[in-house]
Amino acid sequence: MSPTRGGIRRRIGRLRDQALASGARWAEPMIARLPRGGWAERFLLERQWAAIPAGMLERYLVSGYQNPRINVQSILLRHFLADQLIADGLDELKDAELRFAVELNETLRLRALELGVTMGSYLNPRKHAAVQRVDEAVADRQDEYVVRWRELLENRQGPRISMLELACGSANDYRTFVDAGLAAHLDYRGIDLTVKNIENARRRFPDVAFEVGDVRDVQHPNRSFDFVVASDIFEHLSIDGMERTLSEAVRLARRGVALTFFNMADAADHLVTPRKTYFWNRLSRARIEERLLPEFDSVQVIPIAAWLSERFGYEHTYNKHAFSIFALKEQQPAG
Image (cartoon, rainbow, N blue to C red; front, side, top):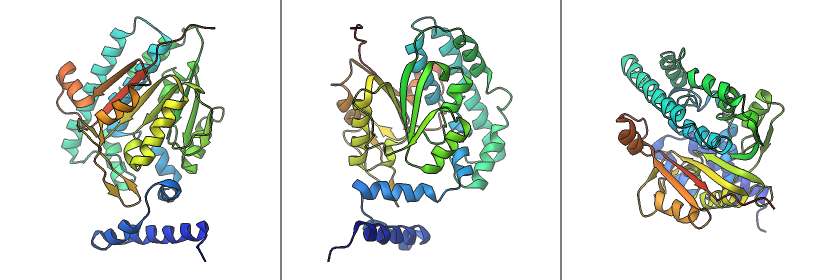
């Protein structure tokens, strides 16, 4: 008799738990037996993140170099959205904010060296606390441009734009959308697979639409949103899962997508790297562009390290493999 899906799930769960509990020497044979893709991918991802305390998830990706107030990719995302709200006159402010971000990132780098702290995005409380000690070096300045944007956007008149954020976490970037006055001009919805993330987000913003869901299979009709945003999720999925998620973003967007990658390269194909119950793939810029170009009228690719070096002379970006991609369709006349 064939095993039930519930029985298979229990066996996968036990195998996953054994792999995580084992030392590196003994874990690899177990990890190799874990299934990849399909419903098993969702199950393993759910189980992976369910084990993390809600408080740690709420503090994840909002400190150190990932602080959305001074993270260059987060700032570029806000600039992209602001451009859809205000057509002209933002170049000087945007340039000044990026220079400010470079300055504060350098302040963090030097302070981390002084304290002997290895910067990163940690779920380990001790390592995360060390990064927070470094954060104190910029605490009194980090809100400077958030305030400037809020003052500018509070006088903006016009229609709101609808936006879906895939893998929104505990409203990591949305918090700064609110503080910068951007959220007031968005009909925003966030989706994440992890229940604790969505509970965190709803607790912070009870009037905002957050939902638990699978980014590979979003339960909304085609072209439901003006813009679809996704940050730092594609590399953690199987290639099939990544391609399905990218197709969902394209399917759901009427006007454009904004995609942030933490591990991309100018390579002919994707480099697949399994990590226990998920992935740490290095994605091919060419392959991602190939998927987007037929669907959009313009596709802008920003290799963050090279771009910061060329534009601002900054050579110390924390991630040499970070890319941001912004794709737009020409707006169709009403009617």
